[in-house]
Image (cartoon, rainbow, N blue to C red; front, side):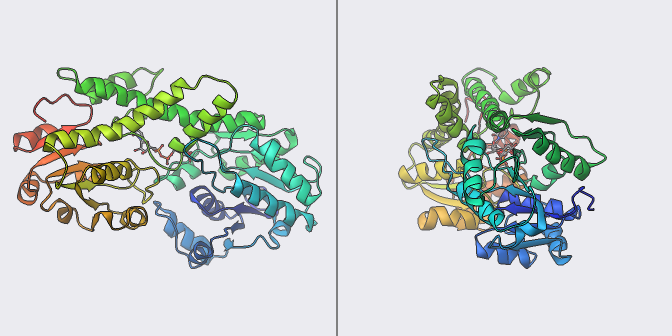
Length: 454
Ligand code: UGA
């Protein structure tokens, strides 16, 4: 019997942020883990002990668990079913701009699991959907596929749960090690109890608040959480627009005041260029689509999305007005990742801003301590990639801080003055000491700060 209470191991389908972090964490707790990933390059990297994603703490632990043989990655499910008790499905669920979810990976994973179960003697494996899906997907899409392909019925031949993930990129391992809650959705109480016991043993002696509910409620909790986080960000960004237009307005102080109200709380009230990443925008679109398909008024969700879009455009418009036109002007964009601590540029504010700057005729130079290569895949040769911050600022007419990497907060005023052609800055993430820079003769527009001189 392992520390997790299991007599056999765990399988994980999909080695993205969620799947890989979960696999490494489980293996670090001594749970024999098999991670199935169709991308062979990723599999090879993992088996070489190299992390395919940029995530704090992950490379060291990954290397350790692979070397010790507790974690195995492979591109085929093979005999996995004979060796595991629980299988987590952690594949991606992208959405188009209309929010319609693309379930192809979830369906494929369900088929794979069903097929492996059809030839396996393993009794009642527990299948757990961790991918973010719309309400009803686990019961009405995943279950029928597994039942049909495996020839087993849910409840007798296998157990099925929904168990959404709440980890954040940049602190994925920490969040997986210390979750604030565990949500389990199941139709059969025995299935839910199995997963609950597994987690109790895994996190012992910590007691993680756990909710057991129906699959649809569990699926909806995940989407509602991300929509609410996005709502907080768009709300504070709306207030930031009001602050910019109000004498002495400073959204930082407003957020502080708001955050002291325990009914509101201080987190997710950082105004700036809005939310990006692979989750908040996508999940919001999916929820909007789902709500609309049920005849529910989606105007609040539309407003959250609209404010987020406007926040990016406002930065470009401000740049245009500060420079008196963008055509032929050199703009340095500092930060490409959708947030610091990651090399992920999916739906990053920086990308929209850069595309708009280019469309308006600017010459764009970019810097990011981690995401340059990922950006190159998307932006191609349309911009100049700078591995050094100073190289990026060199000869620029204006700089926009698009990601709050700590090193940008400490840019020295004399360096700015010696390198930039014009000393104009848009602090899209509110990390600079605006007053100090203004005293040095540098014009800074800080999002959410009333500054008639900027
Ligand atoms: C988000 C959620 O925070 C996780 O709980 C969830 O598990 C994850 O999505 C997911 O569904 O997989 P993540 O996308 O990693 O996590 O990033 P966040 O830390 O939520 O930040 C999202 C975006 O909001 C970033 O662009 C960030 O810069 C922005 N943000 C965040 C703000 O503009 N202001 C804030 O106050 C907070």
